[in-house]
Length: 417
Image 1: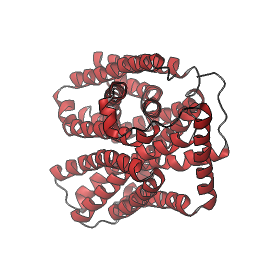
Image 2 (image 1 turned 45 degrees about the vertical axis):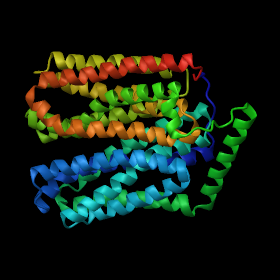
Image 3 (image 1 turned 90 degrees about the vertical axis):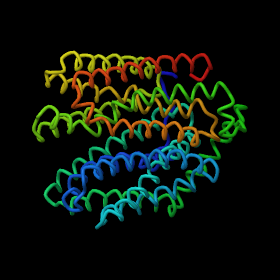
Image 4 (image 1 turned 180 degrees about the horizontal axis):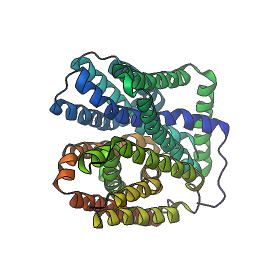
């Protein structure tokens, strides 16, 4: 990496923006479901068990979709599978928006969850296959910006339509369906976009031939037989798991934690979540400028220290709620700099291009599955002991930081950085 980076042309930007919608849809679905659950409790008479089941079901479907979709895209073509994924997200979102009974709601959640999970590893592979490795950081960080925008948009629309009950659900998921459908139309019917995409693919293959780096012919099962790939898979998966457990917990339960456990008002909890997400978005935007430079890892190390210390303080003074509030905002402002974007960059760096979607899907799906199981017990852990729960979060942050340092050393040793 160098301080001066390769300029991203308009064709690459167009590809990244269209592919980045996959991240927007993924986060929007997860957050929108959380907003809709209290409404469905009243309109569909959901029990407490069914309410928890719907949330867990979506996460599990995203996990399963990641594994299956990644394999399908490597097997039958990334562009073809990605286009179908986007279309089915639109169909699933429409079904959820206008579901009048539990049966339809379940069908919509399963369909949208599977498609959303499948399009994420596929979109990353589409980007990395058609862009220079010197642009991975910026390209993937831009998709992370879409992820954060998806969260903010869902929260904002939910806030604007709060008094509409069923209309609120239809608005939130209807917009998701419209965004997915427009994205699908661009990918399928825009001749200019397809030509640009094909040209980028040809250029990438040409650059590979010129540099003498031929595609390594390797299957998914071969990954498990070669130590260099197996070790990378295990390390990256564990890193992402320990990073994702706190990230998913606060993304899904920060309002619950502040309102139910700490007794704060809904206005206070909503304001804290909004401020934290705004800081998260700002750090994403800043990281676009740094992710492909020599500052990538110094910034990552600093973010690890700050984020870990934030929850060390939260655990130490667990009875003082303003300490947690400050710690959470600081964590939100730094976790992007040492988490998901760097994980996605590494997944496109360690593995051969032919199996990137499959292996990333396995890793991403496994983490999502464990996260879904952890989510089932999260409210119990919060009520069991606030202090102990915050120390668990601290332990996860510390573990992900240690693994990140080890992964960077592994990259240097293999000459990949």
